[in-house]
Image (cartoon, rainbow, N blue to C red; front, side, top):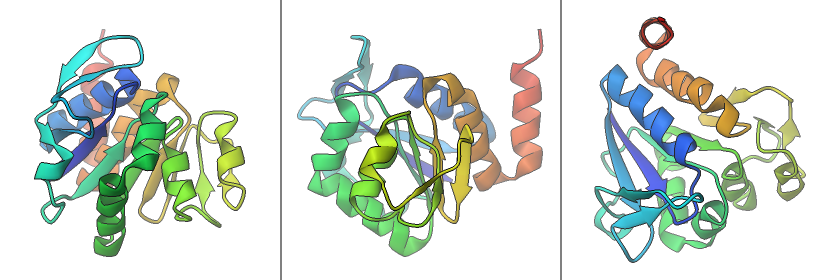
Length: 181
């Protein structure tokens, strides 16, 4: 399984790193993709992360899932990128999972992809998706879309993606392993 994670300056650290860690434990190849002009992407709190490649270097043909971490202004940058929109559209055409957390669901909402769907997002961002159904759940799955409230549920978000890609048994095993004292 190949998972693309899109990173823009101002991404929320745990919303990227925790799901990436969970998915690597499940056996996924997680590719960190910079949407910036630099391979080094700076988080919302100033932590520098080196991506594996630039968005211009991926075409999405071999992706099995696409993840958009939140954080501002990262999510806004994602929403303005034609290359990001192209990868999202390709994922939707292929029927593969598109996961977005915190502010990032509004990227999908602005594209009209969440209209009529059950979603979770950071409080206040539902205003950008008036045709979506904010359920109040921490993590929500509706068809190929996995959305989550924010940084505080990064672990649950990562485990849900792992469950959808690898099955409940794999996700449960990882949850058990990481929660041991």
